[in-house]
Image: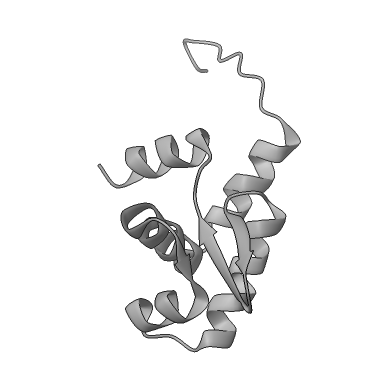
Length: 95
């Protein structure tokens, strides 16, 4: 039996965020975005040395769960992490 009762209100959005971050490659993507700031798919693909289609698929999942934000500039889309919860969580995981 647990000596302390935890009374946290965890929203469905929080659960979805954690599920999205549960994949090792998505963790690497988010870690790089926090480290580098705003990047496009080509920049992330070059840094992580994985196929561009793989980067795009994982960024789509991160967009859907609002882990990353995006901005279209001409033909390119740039991604960044701006959510305080995500930054805090990643800081805790990789401290």
